[in-house]
Image (cartoon, rainbow, N blue to C red; front, top):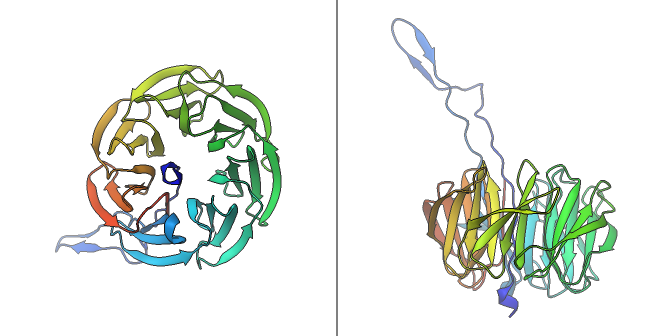
Length: 332
């Protein structure tokens, strides 16, 4: 049953071409200077291999493992910035902070009941971690590596999402959640519960759009994703999706929705909700991330990392481990 858990996260960066060495093309009449388009910095996929106690650092789009980090206790979910990696190990009740550059351990936080999903605040200064067992949301300051606070949000606290303006966080209470807890994060170090939303289906994953006015919530019991008004909590419309539960990632005006049991991933226009494409994904590909022109999915049940371009053209499927639970994209 432990292998039926799933989550998501990630980031990416672009580096411009060195302006001191442009490509040049000359003619006898005049000289034309041609500036090449900016080069995209290579990305890495950070993949948790829970049954092997390892975090795998994998090239994108190559799919080659270039580094491994041993993390005792079964690392399950991961999120990252360009400075720090946050790894949650549900089985051992620990949260590990790694230096993004060296992959060395910064600190290990213990004493959790059943920690699950990490989410780093948009400004990169805080990590929020849900705990299914205690029903708490814990706040870690990434600027000083301290546990700042814990707040009870409800039994089964699982997936969560920050609003882009960092003023609000929604938490799904369970993998098949009847309730979403709404927190004010006006003070990021000490969030407080301000309300609840009861969606008309069992909720699983959730994500605020970049504009912050609506939130997408995937389902644990229906073949669609619901789009909700953030101010009122009202369901605005539904988007067709594969068999539940689904997971979400946003990038460059598009949403990507996986269905691990449906072996599919789809590309959806963020503004209209129009499904543009649905393609194959390895069975069990629940968790995903999207950044820098790539989309990646980790298969909990096949142990693969599938790498797509942003149009969902499959570039590579890399077999990495018996089980790959979560993935986050990051610049090396």
